[in-house]
Length: 421
Ligand code: URA
Image (cartoon, rainbow, N blue to C red; front, side, top):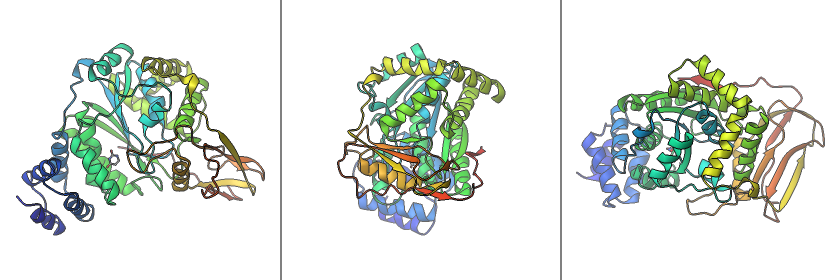
């Protein structure tokens, strides 16, 4: 087999066979296919697409490139995954909440890359929090307290890790078959049998419109059926950041505020919904029963205490959360209603403050980030504080914080949860 012939085939919009896909993944992993050849093939896939069978074969090849965790001894484990958003710290709220409803949550998470955040970075902003667990300890912890969150190890879906890094550098991330196979290969290899997927739609997401988000959802459900995994997809709005805080330790603080004080914002609503579907799958109960259970455990602070238990179990010290040296307050220059918060600008500003990374080896500043004191349709008067900037940089004059649009009239709001598939 020859990589050039395979690239030409895809360039001509022909389907690749299972043998050709297996060859590409094996040869790329053994470095007999070069990065420039692989990125050429990836670009051909972005432009010409892949059918369902090709996507399943690609997923399979990526699953087989690494180890597969057997977590069946834990019982009916439920997992969640977000396709990537700004300010998305739902896992910090949902994992303990679902766990205290009696459902086992064994969660492997990733780090931030590009404009989206990563759960592992948020947890690592808690001094001492151990994200690198042995699989035996991980399984034992889930059996003991129903929940564990660890960093995805290098031996899971190895090909996805290598290919994702290349996609990130070759403008080939935004492809439905590539995203579906990337996400699902990791979930399959990590042993998930029930999965709630939060597919972000909008300006701050890979999927810019509902049509492509639906297509991604159906494709991931098909892969789920092939692997006997029950998958529920929530299509949710990512036109503006989720919650008020963006930046690692600031996001941990917001999750604590929601769990400890029952603060309600868009993040709370989405977290309760995701938790409900996870409990439904985990306990095989109706949505109404799951929702009642989730709400009860949220309101009575069981979820907050489970979060504290989780942090303590993984050696984190919440009293030592890092704080920035400088705090700046941004005030509204006109009055009216917030009509838009530019999610991409927020993500770029946070990254420039140091809370994100461009390459996986970059060091990040856990305390840096923004607090958006106002959200869409909140009314502001001239001089109201609309944003708080947390930074260790003495000069932030080159960073664009002009993220709020203010209009005289209230705007019609898009729903947060657009569809459930
Ligand atoms: N998240 C992933 O894990 N893979 C993608 O391709 C996109 C988002």
